[in-house]
Amino acid sequence: MKSTTSGTAWRHANIGRLLNNAVRRFEGRVLELMTERGHDETRIAHVSLTRNLDVEGTRLTELARRASMSKQAMGELVDQCAALGLVDRIADPTDRRARIVVFTPAGRKWLDAFRDAVDIAEREMRVELGKATMDAILKGLAVYGTEFDTLDDPD
Image (cartoon, rainbow, N blue to C red; front, side):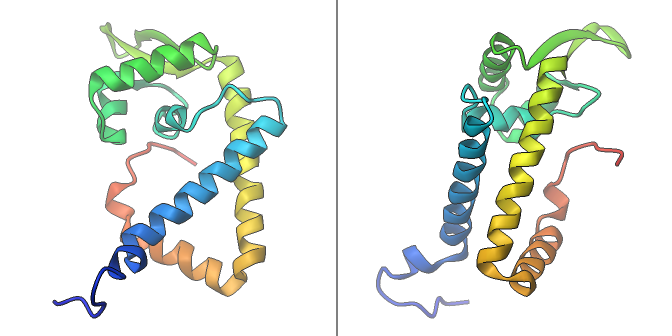
């Protein structure tokens, strides 16, 4: 199928660019809200770890796979988040030879604050875009990206 946009305008109007711009704005707002709540240590790179970390814990190789990054790069993020006191590495209860990454108690509090910041940013987006548009975006993106949702979350 040939693009209907001629010249270079397609570079600004394609869905990938628009989604990326929206994600950058949304994540920027979430980080701003986190800073306002005393979590100024958080960087967007850390969210690549925390958004993929199961509450019960996850192996490093699985975290890297979910985030589409190398094991080494994910290991660096784990080290950074561990230094911040958000996560720890513990023995995997299903295989004592392996280790899993888990949220610390401080990390769980951080996760609660992150959830609250996401909720606020979503409400602000809903106000700006309107309920019908926001509902359509959520429904459409959920369907389109369903096979890429790899987070194990029982609730």
